[in-house]
Length: 527
Image (cartoon, rainbow, N blue to C red; front, side, top):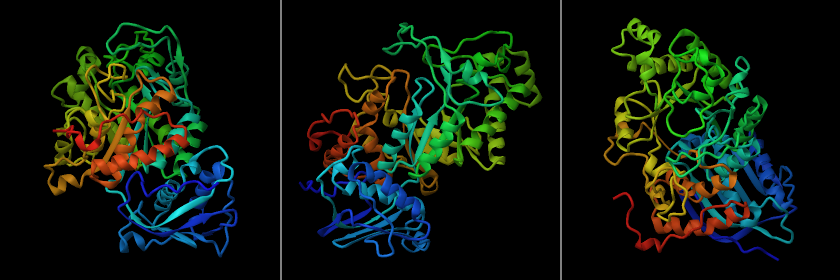
């Protein structure tokens, strides 16, 4: 029996759209007309639709569904790298873009226009696959729309990371920020330093919640990826228009590395374990030449595996007490003409940033105050909303990651049963949707330095894929909508999301239930 055609309720909302009379029917006789350079988009369309529809979508010069690249659209139509135009008529479909990434974004729109069953991973017999006739011109407001997943605290298999990427792509999220190392685990292999995963990838147990407790589960936790798995993940994501940006923490958040190689610390004779607690560990890297060589070697391998133009090196929450106590660190500070051992933080990151820049990459770091990173760093401003503006005024490119609007490990409501990172922290759906990455009082030059925003999911208390998805959705839908579409009316988003949950259901996403009150009665959460 024919499936009910969904209304034009897309997430994120297109820049311009109009519904026309009629519908286009996809069937076994539907073929693709594939322009030069558009084959990857055609292959993605086949891959995504085949499980549910079984449609072959063969190539033909007379195909009814046309995929075409026209570089002139970048300037003439203002579509840029990610924009696309989609026309669905009763007897033909035309998807065009200036760049392949734009076609990949348009493929996701076609998926959302189909009945939700088309997104299922199981065959859907006797279903008619129809697209409403529409005219869409679409391009993002912000180039950086990201999601960070912490696999250092709780390891996730690469099979789940692929599913995570699929869901990002559906929502036109273009950056997958993969947090690979921390005090509690090192997940990426480095051939010159095998103990990083052999020792650093294992901890004896994990601290249990609630936050601040002294309870431990007594269960060993371990896991690491192979180089081949990570390279395959990068390729898999690229085929869906998603860039995987790795994060290797330094000079703090390195207890797992120091457990593997104590000589990299400030007390080389000390034996450390991989940290089992949450929070900020006070053990940090030393500042001697061997440490800088180690960091460069690690980042060389990272750059071999990850072609991302951006490489994240953490940089935040770095206690400096060990440097103050270390003779070698104090001597290094004097030799570099620094005012104190604490100033070694900026010196260290400056050396690392220069190394990445020489290799054609852009260093990224978390900002605690907005002023502690060298100017060649892209800043992820997380601690205070005012830091975004402060960093742009210093000349940084900035990604807004304000924790009270983008941290998805925070509770979603005041319900005491909700999981939370810290007591009292609530980041509800509307707060995420209301967050504008560009500060209201930003002058034009500062606003132009805001690349966009991204969500963060720290996994101290998040062990399973089921919990990851419960915390991520539908809040990531709200972030995707705001970052791609710009400000959208809350009732409008609410109504589109109600339709969109049928797509999440078809994909088996275990999202947080939609239990908010009437959207028209909600106060603004940011005032």
